[in-house]
Image 1 (cartoon, rainbow, N blue to C red):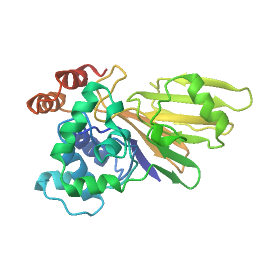
Image 2: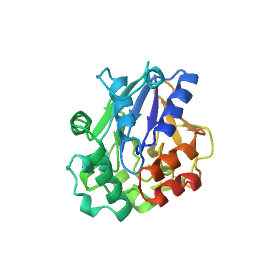
Image 3: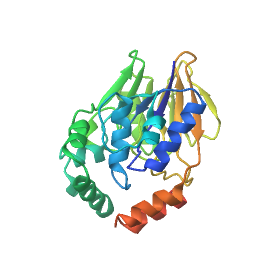
Image 4: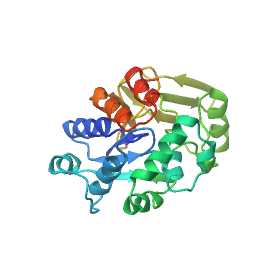
Length: 265
């Protein structure tokens, strides 16, 4: 079976919509979202309602075409720190200024049904006790730490028996690969399209971000997990970044949140 592994939509409906059209071309209809549906971007309601609609819930803010785009998908969601902050599960005072401003703005936009939906999202997911999915880290989940170097990756490799771990949170497409027989870690910013998940290795795989990439490429990234062949495919695609930027500035959110979409940092 094939799953699209995505993360960090962050209220960017233009990027999310283009993802769904991209997946329809590939005939992939199962999605695992590693969290942060909201925060930073100017379309939190459309992003939430698109996901709600995918899973058969009633929505009131999508037009006929937006519903058509969302039709045919099933999506499993994992809670991210911005999702958690919007529903007061995480203290927003620990966020940086721009993230804080965006969370406060997002709270004001969302209605009860949107917050109720976010509150029900789980912190983790697994497939066949083989593939494991989290927003930030596989333990101490609600501390919302980052796996952004080899030493941190090694900590989790040594602590856990799990071989295939998927996380988001950093907004950077990046793989940490641990060879069990010699204790070495490979740190990869993947350019190769297809990666075989090999026995004798452990993997921490980050698909990057849909709504706010930070790896120097403005194009959103995601992974396709093929559980039958035990492979992952690396994917990027273009979207209407100018409209996403304009929506952010029109909403009165910090200009930097718009500008970073253009440069991917």
